[in-house]
Length: 182
Image 1 (spheres, rainbow, N blue to C red):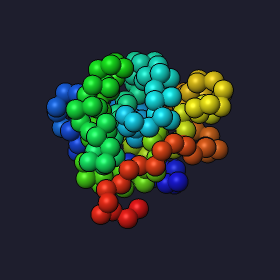
Image 2 (cartoon, one colour):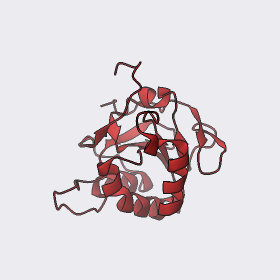
Image 3 (cartoon, rainbow, N blue to C red):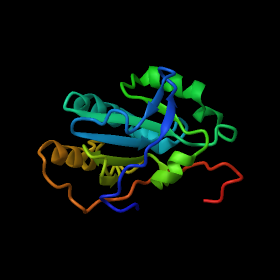
Image 4 (cartoon, rainbow, N blue to C red):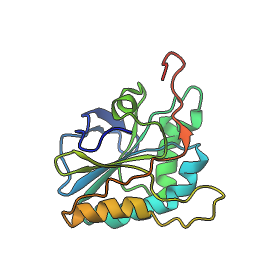
């Protein structure tokens, strides 16, 4: 996993919801930023979406900025392309930008490995958490409570260090384009 303290790579991607370009370093959040690598077809993402949306709604009001990125190859997985991304965002009520990384360069810069994959940055856009939302997985009967993400966000809000004991995300591998060897 990418080392804690690593600065967030800057990027500019189009938000499929608004159609606007989004640049990470343009307007940093007052408290922190969460970058979520997700997609539409992955059963792990589908499983955590309700809790992911609850967390975003709860913490947006507290000064945490959220954004989601889909980097999957839409030729191989059409469900993960911009039109379907827009539909899913509307259906689930995403209140954050949903960005399409067509070149997959942003996913590579973040060293994102799977969907879902979560990265939390402080107000200076330095990495303080990378890993799972919680222990819930399809079929394991663990509660969808977002405990790992919530602990990191609460530490940021309380201006406390985030625990370095972090579990990596588990999910579907990012669907890299054929010409990429990752």
